[in-house]
Amino acid sequence: MPVYSPPSENIKFILHDVLNASSLSELPGYEDVSQELIDQIIEEGGKICENVLFPINQSGDQEGCTYENGVVRTPKGFKEAYQTFSEGGWCGLSSDPEYGGMGMPVLLNTVMQEMICSANMSFGMYPGLSQGCYEALHHFGTDEQKALYLPKLIEGTWSGTMCLTEPHCGTDLGLIKTKADPQDDGSYKVTGTKIFISAGEHDLTDNIVHLVLAK
Ligand SMILES: Cc1cc2nc3c(=O)[nH]c(=O)nc-3n(C[C@H](O)[C@H](O)[C@H](O)COP(=O)(O)OP(=O)(O)OC[C@H]3O[C@@H](n4cnc5c(N)ncnc54)[C@H](O)[C@@H]3O)c2cc1C
Image (cartoon, rainbow, N blue to C red):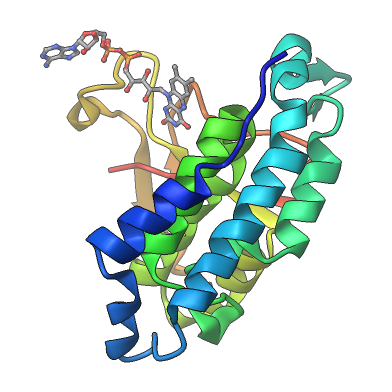
């Protein structure tokens, strides 16, 4: 029977003995990031990967998502696992505290990603894509967009996607045909076709935010 044991001791060795990760506490905003806090996050994150995400990895692959009457349903257990994951604050581990995030260094989020993707890659796609969406909006969104989207993405009640690929191009995105025409009211009229959008439809969240690449 397959097992997943988080490699906590190896991770701690790399973070503390090789990278001196607690020196991050010298940077503004990370004053509280002590060795104890880092270890606590690794331990708790490891537990959720081992006990919540890994048990639904194989069954999730076997069952897959289903599409029925216009509704996409994730495999058995995914919804409950996502709820546990988001309620634990893991969607916003390294997100901006101004919008409800935990404000931990991205380094810790990278560790968490490594454990999530080892335990259940399919599950990891959902919060992973939301994070990309969060980063793009956090860097480039207007204040109004940030206030609307970031708290929801951080608490995990909304998720995100990246709509890049089109039927004739994936690798060479310079060839996209999707167009965004500016309208008089400040909005954009978007026309085009996107395919292969991971987490494009599912039953884990109340809303799905689609970031669409267009010219
Ligand atoms: C599981 C999965 C999830 C995905 N999720 C998303 C998603 O969330 N959002 C999204 O937008 N897309 C998504 N995609 C699409 C993915 O980004 C594209 O499949 C990928 O970019 C490759 O594009 P393509 O399939 O059109 O292949 P092509 O671009 O046609 O490539 C086919 C082959 O040609 C090679 N090739 C292409 N161009 C060149 C070049 N100029 N020089 C040399 N070699 C070249 C490629 O390396 C590849 O081997 C997903 C795909 C998969 C499989």
